[in-house]
Amino acid sequence: MRFDVSIMAPSLSEVPRYVQVAEEVGFDALWTSETQHDPFLPLVLAAEHTQRIGLGTAVAIAFPRSPMVTAHIAWDLQAFSQGRLYLGLGTQVKAHIERRFGMPWEAPVAKLREYILALRAIWDSWQTGKRLNVRGRFYKLTLMTDFFNPGPIAHPHIPIFIAGVNRGLITLAGELCEGFHVHPFHSARYLKDVFLPTLEEGLRKGGRHRQDIQLASTVFVITGQNEEEMNQTREWVRRQLAFYASTPTYRLVLELHGWGEVGERLSYLAARKRWEEMPKLITDEMLATYAVEAPWDRLAEALLARYRGLLDRIALYYPFQPEEKERWYSLHEAFARAGR
Image 1 (cartoon, rainbow, N blue to C red):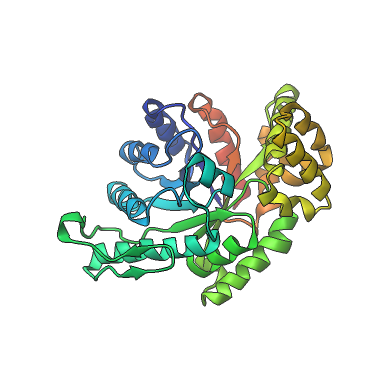
Image 2 (cartoon, rainbow, N blue to C red):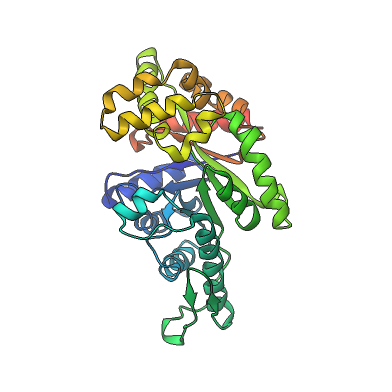
């Protein structure tokens, strides 16, 4: 199993320090997200200031960007990083696409499928000179002249990861993608009973096998080097779970364990901005289901015990700080020893 890290540097000026320490620790890949900052700009700096570590988005939101825009960004990053890019794409949910990005929301699974195929057609056109001829329901891309063609690169294969919770996107990943970002709001039972069987449907549809796709996730952990840190992390995770569980799109993960009514109550509170009441609905049993709890010095073994055979790559839903390099280095070493 690969051990990755999520990077959330407070500003672009801080990115070099974060990524250099991440590479020194020994992480296999670093991932950026599209929350408060653009997901791609930090990867330019990461490519410049590292040599080995993989670089990925977890995730960039696809639909606000034309496939051509995303294709250009990914092509340049892949060339600049000498083949280290993982392009992670997400659909987001209807409210954010329509009200935060101001874009139309329509048939997200079908649209993302066409988006992925369009990206690959664009890249193939640049690499081989083949005529660009994408004619779909959502995208028509038929013009590519030499003036706009960046030309071939040394590492033209860019792995595409997508993300989600529900069955349509999981099936799509099995059919078409090199990877899938499992949402942090998950359980081992969800992975075994829902996710993996659904993924197999997609793999069969695409004539592919389990080894053809990497499953990655940023996982919730309740950890620390003493009881005070453990308690602080526990309450922070409780708040994060309440936030995710309030989103109807993720209701499946609650209903699987018989907690569908909790999700409905959380949605009700969130709609009325009663944020402080929400964490109280996340019980200790729910914490144990959706998060791995262990002291820092035993966390590696606990992570492997839950996820070995289920995921191929994990990162922690836990702040990475360069000042704590030795702490992270010890965890990485423990993870490597336990995984042998």
